[in-house]
Image 1 (tube, protein in one colour):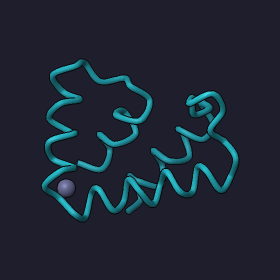
Image 2 (cartoon, protein in one colour; image 1 turned 45 degrees about the vertical axis):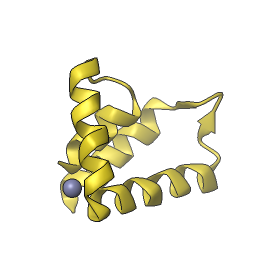
Image 3 (cartoon, protein in one colour; image 1 turned 90 degrees about the vertical axis):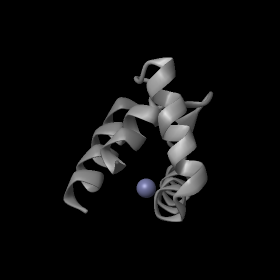
Length: 68
Ligand SMILES: [Zn+2]
């Protein structure tokens, strides 16, 4: 599930898939908490510009998800 979060963040998922992730986030404290943590980290790093996450940051996030 976690690897889907980065796709969700970079809006790489088709609409139907995004809805599945959004629904899951609504009912899964673990994943929604992780997403909030990730978004907070991104904000702290100042990597969110104009609502877009830079590619290197996404890569790092993906690696951190896969490692967890
Ligand atoms: Zn979950």
